[in-house]
Length: 133
Image (cartoon, rainbow, N blue to C red; front, side, top):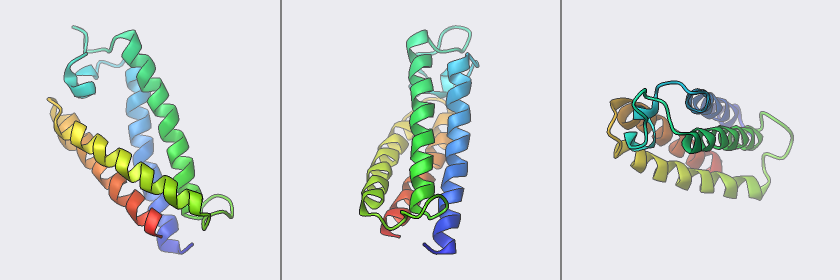
């Protein structure tokens, strides 16, 4: 893979780290619940119910795996960058992030709408570019 693809994979992984930190914060009880899940499940103190905190923890783990796959595809890790399965995975991630962007943009909180919406839109584009690679 080219240096541009490696750089793109690293940049996308950095964005994923932001999302992972946000999800881990939610899981740990940070009062950011109004900026997640459409703002509809936050408790009075701004935290999430236990079920949604668990979902945020699972989301963080999934995003970590996505980052690992993107780094593989970009040639940053390992020597399998040209494997067609990685390209297909990137297409799947692109679709997932595009759907997630639609959900974020429909959210009530400005951080969810503009911050996380922009983050997931950038991830969708990065995944398309890595898939095409």
